[in-house]
Length: 302
Image (cartoon, rainbow, N blue to C red; front, side, top):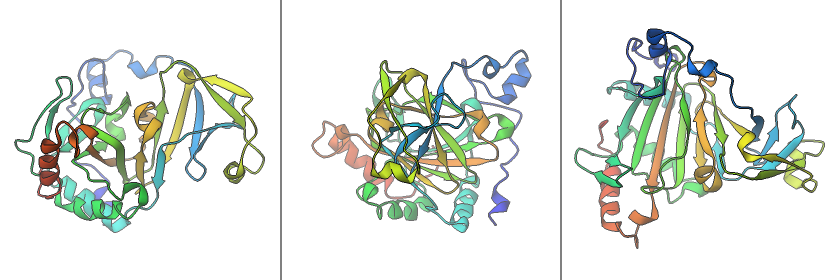
């Protein structure tokens, strides 16, 4: 059953790209040199290790063997079973997918939001989909998510035939709260994290026996690298759940590069409310209304 849901329905003639964003479909139609072939800005690649919480310089790079702590990333592997994954994607594919930017397709379960004007409408919002009820309940079994109550779910469909990707970005912080939670389905990929802030990161020389030795301690910082030149690769196994908080949520932009989509990938991202919409916040009543709708689990894609 799992294999039967991997292939996406044929939607390879149209795209939803706007402005500077492109996908393989519109690039073939427009012709010329696609933007991703331009020389990329030089970066230093580090690999995130979930068992230590450190980012370590990639092999054969200028910073091989050097590391720095990378807090705010929690990875829960095998969050759902293969059968649960297959059933979830099958139910998603029964609903319409909308064309989106950069070769993606999407399904939105949430209020209609104008982030620039900081306004939202609840009309038409009937909650998260029914098949997410057990997923949300299971999230609460983990300490980092025991009080997590999502008010929005966004499903994104990535496909190598469309050249799917998503540019580096930070999620909104006016409406969405501290934790971003994403369930990675159908294939593994890499979340690429970058930071545009000025300044430098202090690096430690990773001791022998890495990665286990990093849990016990490292040498004093003795090297640095400019923040703007660093990219941290966070491997996302199939069926894993990712939680971003703190600096990883608010300071480091996250992206999925086209080269890291090698097979169909479906991602379900869940977002909670910010403090403004929680008890004691300026819009707590609206927040309570959104939660009541969301957690009724009667939704259809908006």
